[in-house]
Image (cartoon, rainbow, N blue to C red; front, side):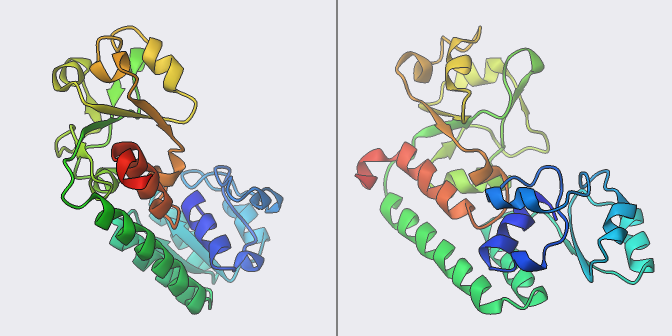
Amino acid sequence: AAPNITEIIFKIGAEDKLVGRTDYCDYPESVSSIESIGTMRTPDIEKILSLEPDMVIASTHFNEENSQKLQDAGINVISLYEENDVNGVYTMIETLGTALNRNDEAQNTVNEMKDTIGKVTDAVSGLEEPTVYYVVGYGEGGDFSAPENTFVGGLIKLAGGKNIVPASDSWSFTLESLLEADPYIIVVRKGEKDAFMNADGYKELTAVKEGRVYEIDNNLIDRQGYRNAEGVLKLAEIFHSDAFK
């Protein structure tokens, strides 16, 4: 299972059914005791077969050929693809609940998420949206961010932020565009704040000069799963700190 799926399996109490995971599955910590089968893009099919699973839960990067090999071996393959918004995550959790016979736990998880996100949207409703930029990549490798029509873009909106990156097919952005938009708030991945603030070219940004660069555990918003509700709350606390005191 991919990292987001592994997290959901543990959350709904079905971890005893999990016999294999990918190299990138790192949450919760106890997942490290479960056998890894490589990555979703390059899984070790022989290893998967040796674990004798009844079912393989595949995600976006698992290709059709590998899926067919497993089906030919009599293994049931369930594919869960990347969703466009948080409603899709609710469906993903419910689907896993049905597949793993954990319907009640799955429904409780969805209800918890809806409750948290509902409280956030109520709290930020009617407040002025600060302009926001979420840093996915910066510096010599180029500037990358989540456009407003992506999953992460949707979470920024739910949290009451105005994403400066317009709808696009590409996550690529330019430093010129960033400097021109000069967002009020910049969000970076955990551990990158100091490096970003001191990198050439970014010191001219008002958010850098005035200390409005904030860190977030990017797994809360990049990985599609139950922790997205916590991600929305954390973003909202950054965007509208007064509303969450």
